[in-house]
Image (spheres, rainbow, N blue to C red):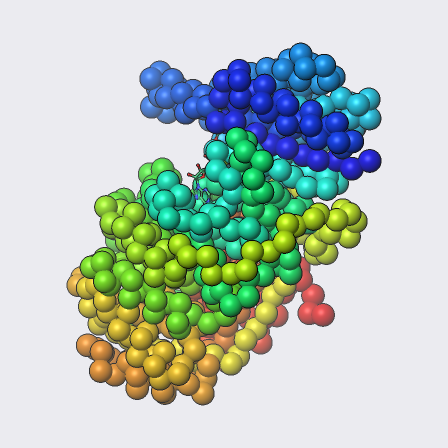
Length: 596
Ligand code: ADP
Ligand code: ASP
Ligand code: MG
């Protein structure tokens, strides 16, 4: 018998009428002959209200007690939904996270799932009951209640779908699918009928609040098809599926996302020697903070600047970790800006960045929006802008990629097939305490491989002015010269100018440099060959510490890092070409990946 997992978000169970409507949906599926397991969030704004209540008592509520408090919201919902289903004549039973043995680590308020025991759910399902499970919560090995992080009910739902081998996981919410961007900010956004796990992973972790990004890690690792749809209509929604089932031919950009509440930290005067980057990120990773947009300037006179972004709420913790690290490595000072936002575009069709980057940067230039930092990965480009201009930036970018026009043939409805053989081939889990001080579990990092690319060259422009339109002009000229750009990084400018670095195929390096010549206000440096090293996996950024582990492994062999790119599926670094093979070997060793 096939099993369907349905998840109802807060707005979908906000009042008794909505709870009854959710109950009817579950019953409909049950009457079609499926076994049905429902995951529910707290009603309406309950979680926000509980957070506010705690803050009325104290500015620093203990994380353990926060979890004790926040988990109550979901407990209310499951009980009411079970009553609703029973009242409509179908047997139902509700469970908390602890009651289904959903065990997590002990990182309160951002715990990760270690294990789920399926017996109790399976026996209730076999009895013909609709099983209702509280989302967002679990219990650690000492029976302390934990929560998975805001929005975490999605992760509970997909994890349960994975362990129980569900045919699909339906996410019922207040939008009828995944849109090209948040429709609340850009009303012209369009629904996407299918999207790949990798694109959704990027979008979710770059700010698309419609799905908790960790839920997509589960979906990808275990091959669970997700159907995001409206609780208030029967319209088909968006299927989040494997790349082969999702491909939108001819489309470079699938969606755009905004992370509004970001903060930028810059460490200045960082000595340019192996091990320093590792030292800095190691201490931040230990604080369990997700870091993004790591950018390191090309060193001048033996010192470099390293910038990165974090969620604004993590700023106090990160600053103290960064200040300690800066002192330890002999950097001159730490600066920060808490009024920034990150705008990103994501698309599997973005094989090279030249055209996509130019379109994005020109759109921002037309609005007079200054780009403070740039980073890319294989399937995304992110820029950091002033927070006050963030919504305008998102709108401009969305329009520039014509995301408001239907530009692909709609795919036929996705039909999930048998669950057999859907899961990724799971490679050895990381076995290094440098990565995470967490014991193994279901949500552990999975590394898919380590790669070396020796075909790239690096180009750096020094003395780049801090003004709107500069990056747009540079990448327009490079594109016009027929050069494909791979990685792009630009650090923030603190003294009126900065550097812009990018990689291109070796044979195009001189052509790219010549194309930049008219815009250069300072020196242009070409590194004729660069070793690009990649560690690929799932959830590379949200698992804090992967980048630090990579930097650590390279530092141990005295390999200096020149360029860094991070994404949810890959971390890339550029290093000296002569150290390429050695770097590959030491990364394979560090991440327990063998060479074949
Ligand atoms: P739930 O409580 O059901 O989990 P959420 O508020 O977490 O609902 O997620 C739904 C919201 O996500 C939508 O109302 C929408 O404003 C926001 N959102 C952000 N980005 C996107 C996107 N790309 N597509 C659809 N919705 C998005
Ligand atoms: N109730 C939790 C929150 O508001 C979990 C969720 O809704 O997914 O974050
Ligand atoms: Mg949500």
